[in-house]
Amino acid sequence: MAELTQNEKKLLAALEPLKTAGPDTLSQILGTREDAVIQHAHLLADRGLAEVLRTTEVSYRLTDEGIEYREHGLPERQLYQSFGDSIPLPDLSKNPFSKIGIGQMRKKGWISIKDGVVKKTGTASEGDDERALRDPSIGGRPVQDLVKRGLLVEEETVSVSIRITSEGTALVRAGLDLTEETGTLTRDQIISGAWKDLALRRYDVGKLPKKAYPGKIHPYQRLIDHMRHLLLEMGFTEIQGSVVQSAFWNFDALFQPQDHPAREMQDTFYLGERLAVPEGYERVRDMHLFGGETTSSGWGGAWSRDKAEQCVLRTHTTSLSIQHLACNPEPPVKAFCISRVYRREAIDPTHLPEFEQLEGIVMDEGVSFRHLLGYLKEFYGRMGFEDVRFRPAYFPYTEPSVEPEVYVDGLGWVEMGGAGIFREEVTAPWGIRHPVLAWGLGVSRMAMLRLGLKDLRLLYRSDIEWIRETPTWVPEHRRGR
Image (cartoon, helix red, strand yellow):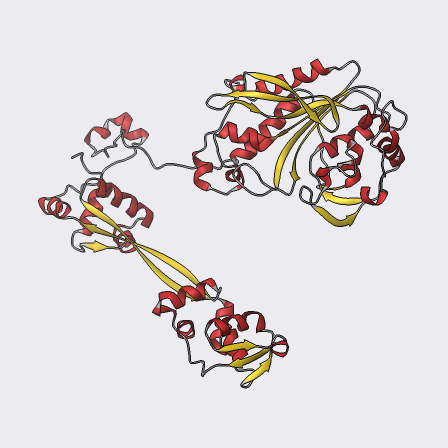
């Protein structure tokens, strides 16, 4: 057995006459902190010289509501005492305790309801839950029921005690050298050679120190910040905008017809507020009706200004891109946005009703589809995906359109978003005469691949252990900087 440290010896010597003691008692005897006592006790436990015992005690505390009901009776008891042998249900429903009390009285068999009349069925003797409200220490099912009702709060108290083993006792009785040791040498002790006569503290260099957890940015936020820095390095400007958008900017300005399925309630969060359409909205209206002054024939049918002024939680960040272009119709424009969007999705491991989306646009003289593919390949390459490919796709407001895919070991080719060149119907109403390259990708999908997750919901949970253990990812091209 390796030699004990001086602190371990002192703890054993203090513990031996007591046999078992708490860290508070031992810290007073040794003149040190309780956490230091526990740390040294664990080291002794590793050697079989002591045991660290943890005891958990459960107790119950009344909430403010529970205190009130203990004094005046549970809602069902107060409701029961508020009427005689019977009462019309509508009259009883006016009592402020009816919402809770009627159901509880029926559950306990205190009343029956027939033909709209509430009748008492018996004496309604005191129940176990009422006794538990007075004395939660009785425990059992009644107490758990009160916890579910929010009248009691369960609290756990963990206590630690340290007990010396027979091996530890034998070692103390055999004699421990408690000579004071020197842990730090002074300059004079080294120069004079006095250190040679000192009892030096021994250190086990093979023993791992206590793990330290420094402050750390959430892995998902760190990845978002990295994407932002990449795009800024590539010469893009970041744009931002409101979460609440008019249907005009979210749909109409992007040439999505007003009867498009994406506008239905099952896909979009509609709000009660309204926003006026901007100046020049007639050009967008005409584009929908008959193609405006372009060669397009539009969608035909009807176009409603009232529908365009409805407010929604933005379903994509493209609504911010088109507004930026409308304010900056002359080249060059290189902008991006990383923001949260909202859709009515059923929550599961791969879908959430709100998530982050990255949107990018480039508008300049002479840019082409080839430039778009180059931007995407460069961006994904800097994100650590070496193999990138593209396949044709369809999107309502771009033509031609593609879906970029990256190759991931163990998964194969994974689709990462959508891209294309804005259609003339989108740009012409704002006087934009040059091609606009546009793309969007789901940031959360990228994060799941980078962080090795299978459940999207983990990105939004405050799991301290996961945050601590997730390494800081740095792509190959940035290492060594």
